[in-house]
Length: 85
Image (cartoon, rainbow, N blue to C red; front, top):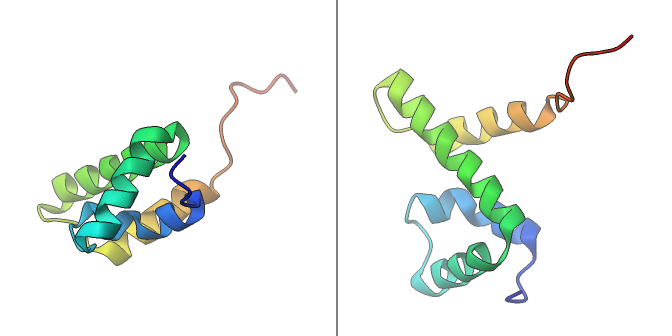
C-alpha cells in the first residue's frame, strides 16, 4: 500500500470526487484507491450516492448532503437475509 491510512483517504474522498484536492493529494488518493479494494468499494458507494441524488434532485449533490446520506447508509445494519426466527 502507499503508506496512506484508509481512514484518512475516506476523510478526503468527497474532496477528491469534487476535484477539490491539490494535485499531490489527488495523486496519493488515486494511488491508494488503485491498490486498496476496500477503499475503492467505499468510493464506488460515494459515486453511486452522488449519482442518485443528482438524478432525483436534478442537480449535483452538495458535499454536506452526500455526507449525511452516507452516514445514514453506514448506520443501517447490514442485511444478512431472511430471519429464521
